[in-house]
Length: 90
Image (cartoon, rainbow, N blue to C red; front, top):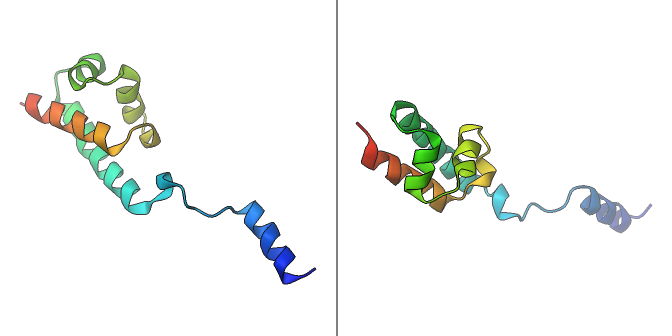
C-alpha cells in the first residue's frame, strides 16, 4: 500500500478539525460564561421560564445550559443571559 493511499484513507477516518465548534478558545470562553451564568441562576429567585422570557430566549436554551449542553448556545446568547441575570442579581 502506498503512502498516498494510507494518508487518504486516514483522512476519511479522521477528518480535519476545521469546524468552528471545535475551536478551543471559543469553547473555553463559552465554558467560563456557562459557569458564571449557572452561579447567577443558583442565587436568583427567578425560574428558568422567567429567565428565558427576560432574556428573549426559548426556555429550552436555559434548560440546555443547566443540563450542560453548551453546544446548544452561542456566545451572544450566553452574554444575553449573563446581562439579564446580573441586572436581577440581589
